[in-house]
Structures are given as C-alpha cells and as structure tokens.
Length: 303
Picture 1 (cartoon, helix red, strand yellow):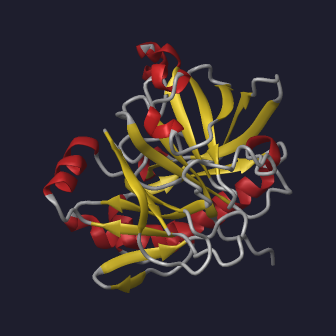
Picture 2 (cartoon, one colour):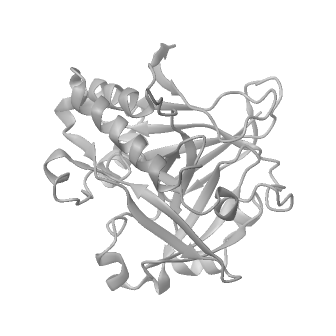
Picture 3 (spheres, one colour):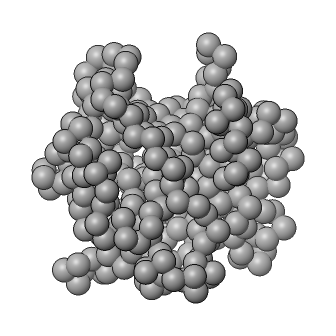
C-alpha cells in the first residue's frame, strides 16, 4: 500500500497594490531580498518572491495594474491587501501532477471519513487544476493547485471565496521545484533581517467555530493538535531541514484583543500574523527585530 507523504508548508501569500509590487516599500526592502517572479498563466496576477533557506517563501502578488476586471474572475479577487493565504506541498514532487492527485484523494478521504466537528464547517477540496507562470528569462514554470471549497461545490469543481484563506490550498510542482523555489541562489536567501525560515503563523477564527477549525486543520495536516499554555497549535515541517532550526507551527486561535476582533470582522478568517526565524540554533525565545505592522500584515522576527 502506498503511503501519502505528509504535507509541509510551501509558501505564504501577501497581496499588494500593483505599484508596491513594482516598487516595493521600505518595510520590504529593509528586511528582505526580493526575487523577480513573473506573470501567471491566467494573465491576472504578477508576483515577486522572498525565498528562505528552509525552502519556504513569501509570495508577493498583485493584480496587474490593479484592474478590476482581473480581480473579478480570480479566487483572491475579493481579498483586501495584506496576508491572504498560504499553501502546503508534499516533500517529494517526483511524480508531478500524480503526487497532487494522490494527496488530494487521501485528504478527501480523511475529511469525509472523520466523525468530528470539522463536518460542521462543510469545507472540502476540489480536484487539482493546472497553474503556472513565465519567469523574466522566459522559462515556464508549471504546477497544480488544489483549492478549498464548500462541500456543495466539489462536484462542480468550483472554489468558494467564503473559505479562501481560512484553510490552506495545496501546490505541487510539475516542472522541477527548483524552477519555482530556487534556494541555491545564495543572494536570494541572504536577507537584511537574516531570516532563515518560517517559525510560526496564526489563524484567528470565531470562538464558536474554534473546535471545528482545530479538527479540520488536524485532518488537513494529518496530525494531532498540541494544547499548551491556553493555545492550540499544530506542527508543520519545512521542505528543507536546517540543523538545529526549530519546527514551525500553526496556531488556531480566537480573538484576544479588540484589534483582532476588528480584523476578523473586517477581513474574515485568514492568516493574521507570521513569525519568521532569524536565529536557527537553540530555538531561543524573543523578538530580535522590529515587527512589520502594515494594513493586514503583521510579521515578527524571532530568535
């Protein structure tokens, strides 16, 4: 029997105004080395990338020229600027699209077969679809993506904007992963902030849906939640294991402060903050650099 690999964190998505993608603001340039990306195959969006040594990255994305027509037909078209989504992948993409379908089928079996509060959310996934972009040098990068949706939309193959960003999508490479995520370029992973990878990130959900989302994330990640110090977290892995670097985590939380309640009401369920790892060894606790606090974007830098 074939064992489906556990998913690992692939990348985090930040939506920017097009002008800021073209000329990144200082909060980006003072913290990160930014690599040119390209125009996606749907001709709606363009991106630039922030690669980390652990094989993860941040995708900076914008609708080309901020044209409303490009937003209208896109799954992120209703999203506000800021942190909007994140993706998982599997440790090996040797089978290209086949790996995506094996992962999808195993995921759907877990979600549909579970007897848990996750069913109350009615969230499942649609079958993988093709995606890609053209790099500035003309190289074509290809992948498949698997999007969350409402159970009622699965048979139609339609994603649901109401759950976009509330749970991760899946991204599997068809062309070699190094074409999409080139961590061998030392300049691309040498950041002014000295960031090496993703430490943790948080998703804030309504209190009445907390246990349902914890159950659903457990099924998606195929792992058990850890409850400690009044928090609930689930363990992730990165595509590249850096010796001594602490395992990344995702926290599923309810609003604790007024600003979080406001953000949830304004933006819906999505990533609320990201912490990046600067010091790989020892896993010490503490903030080592001023945090980024922009509209819809909270980024912290940890030891």
